[in-house]
Length: 297
Length: 77
Image 1 (cartoon, rainbow over the protein chains, first blue to last red):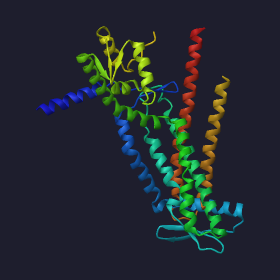
Image 2 (cartoon, each protein chain N blue to C red; image 1 turned 135 degrees about the vertical axis):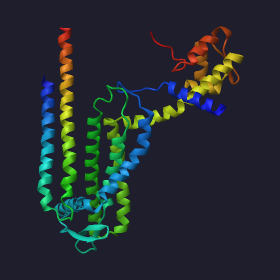
Image 3 (cartoon, rainbow over the protein chains, first blue to last red; image 1 turned 45 degrees about the vertical axis):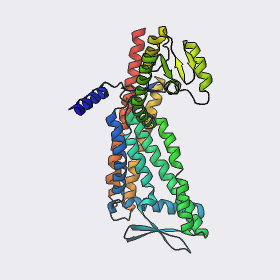
Image 4 (cartoon, one colour; image 1 turned 45 degrees about the horizontal axis):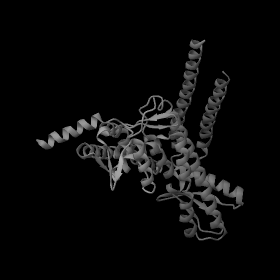
């Protein structure tokens, strides 16, 4: 029974919990817990499902387009006389015929679709802000991010294959160049994340927001602990105050003495002492959303 | 007004690119050798239709904001 009451109380607290607001580029970002959870769970599932869909044999037209475009550019830039050959066998429908070398078989992973799928899943399930003005043009921004990232991945993938096949043609072993260059070309994902942040800052902000949601109850608990300590003994631990005031460890001793002087408190050992007449004011400032930040009127 | 014309041109160009892409898909399909070559169109054309709607929706967004701004200016004067 007690356990149930405690759970009910926690649920009540959760309901009354004031959601944090992130302000970025003059826009407000507030995310619902449901959308954040959906993002974490559904984005990888959707990415995988899209990949599985493109890995079906009915979608091997994609292999053909990528192989033929690569062959076209190989012959254009390197005058290689390579060929794209339709030779269905197991997972491979298409292969590159390179003069003087063994053929290279082509599979779904070589199309670069996996990178597009990952970003498609992320972009589609990136949470929308609950602020109506911020989410007004989210569909447009998401579409832009999706199209641009897909085009970049597609082009980079073709360039990667051009480099690899040219190196293979001039004599390098396929095993030596295949994985290393493929891994190196994945740096492009970092550029896509930066581009994505330009159009859909919701992606990175939602991660920060999740961190804030998790840390908020801890911060609140810390504040209550300091409040109780001040009420009982007119003193608070310096370590807890450092965390509440978000001061850096290195410059803490300097900053805290200046800060306590400004507010009229005294420091002794590991504690900060609050005079009786300032106790109520201290607790008021402590329990603010932004502790000890005086509002400018 | 000048800004709206510029935005109209942007929307027009995007719709043109979208149509051109659909045209290229139509041209490419008969040249494909894969077994299920028709799926290229089956998958890409619905995506292009959705994109078409999103571009039009963007134009609606521009118009809405321009009208709101004009109404505000008229109310002030």
